[in-house]
Image (tube, rainbow, N blue to C red; front, side, top):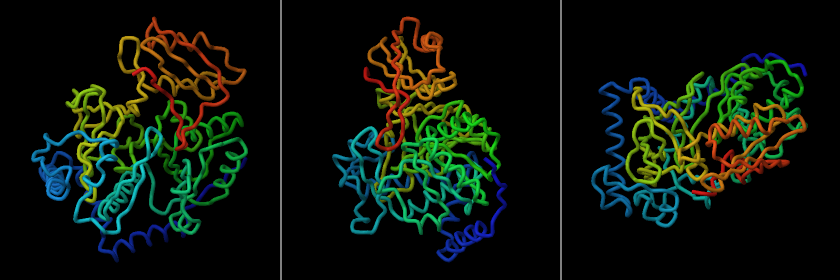
Length: 434
């Protein structure tokens, strides 16, 4: 397959200019947010940035206390309880801010992968802030407004946009479900014949399938104008990170975000730790089974206070994810994000084990996919989707015992496919014990 070089097109520049011209006509609302994010994150320790952060936090707390039923009896931040989807779902009206009643607001729907989907509202300033966050963090990964966005995820009727809107925003919707060789070949052929700068945004499991396809074709690196690669929603294994850089020529960075809030953190180029979006959120790590702060370096629940959604304030919101924060660095960073608490795997001593031990099994020749299920304290099932080339079962059991414990009982099951969730994501780990 021959790929063309892609010059910067006039249409890209026009889209870039048009976006910022519209923002200028509207009073530079997005630009002001971008400037605020830039200043705080790049001057984190300055007295002015510290003051700005403190004011944002105090203002959203006071707003929540004075305008919502749920928060009206709290006074100081430390008094505010940890909340989660279930609490919000059962008392949704109590969380909604009274001044926004009857206003036209944006509705976002959280994924139903781990529980019943939840609809939340966002006011206009919050949506502007999310746009600005996206612009700032995408730029860090090499993206510029006007580039074509290759958006690889599951597109249901709720998420899918019209062709006119996708053209205006220069987005190509790519479906991650049922990606076969024919579909991947078609994608690559289309984008190779598109003489524009491009950026990938999508699920790592989809990237992995593309890289495996290119491996089988013994492909050379593809010089097709890719300027940025961002992974979202799933953990990224070493193979996918290295292969995407090999084939498309730029580093892959992982983004930590959710529908309820927005972009909470993102890796910088060629780093593994996550830069926290302190400009838009206040992030804490709480112990897994106690509502008390975890120690620096201790895995715990990621708790987010949204500094911008005034329509439905989310203060000390338990995202359901587990991470590790490092306070020895200024500003503090998320060193690891392990995914959903319900999917955390423990070794036979009861210690948390990184999900990357599973995502990296694709480095074994012949393994296409893997999934680890914990059945009891010492009982595990390793599901492998493998070809006839794979003949290292004992080696892989030995490796996993090194992570899980010599007394771990590991049953290997061979399957034709690791099933996708309704969201199009694929779980690397499942815990049926805790």
